Each structure stands twice: as structure tokens, then as C-alpha cells.
Length: 141
Image 1: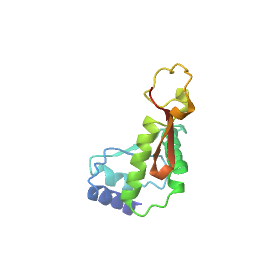
Image 2: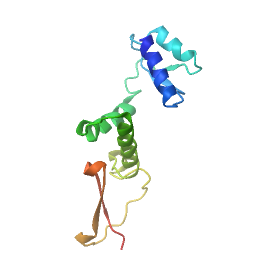
Image 3: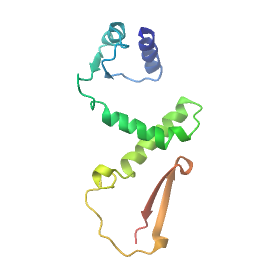
Image 4: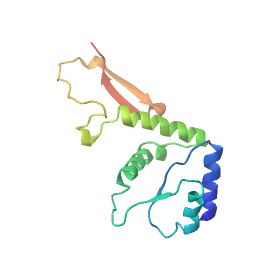
């Protein structure tokens, strides 16, 4: 596991990524040597609390959505391609995808628009990732 810590640090340095936090659960596979490697770089690990199974639930849910809606349906041939897919999904998820907890509205939309009688021809579609992600909207009058 210590070798995995070194590999992660080398990869982060090559990509010029500043690791500020290392969050992991209390699994025994994370040895003291693993934690010590990151403490030596002034960025010690942050352990999830005992008896808190929901500590990572939001991250796990988001990662599951990313995998189901994008990564399981695409072939990725490079890290650059995966980075493009993830960045595109982040934009789509935060600006256009309806969220059930927000009344099926995207984040940032506060009030419900007033229902209006609009013609069907006014509906437009925006796509991402070759049509994998879609957003339908009404054209402004």
C-alpha cells in the first residue's frame, strides 16, 4: 500500500495537482506507512468518523451517477479523454440536470416558472458527449 501512496504522489506531481486533503475510511488496508507518506508532505489524511456510514454517501452517489450516465457507455483511450468527459458531466450535472431534491430543477433555479401555453415547435435540445447527455428547453419568445 505504501507503493500505491508513492504512485499517487508521483502522478499528482506530474499532473501539477496539489493534494490538499486525503480522505479515506478506516479500512485496515490503509496502513500507517500509507498515512505517514502523506503526512510527510504536510497533507495528512482525514479519516471518516466511526459509525457514520453516510459520511461518503454524497460523493458515492455522484460517482455512481457519473458511471451510470457516462463512463459505462463510453470507451476511453486516454486520461485526457476521461478528464474531458468528467468536466463535461460536471457542467451538465450542475447547470442542466434535474435534481429530485430540488423539485426536479437544476441547482440555481429558485422559483417555478409560470406554466404557459407554448407551441411544440418552440422546444429545443442541447446535447453533450455526442448526444449521450441531453437537455430539452423551450426557446424564448
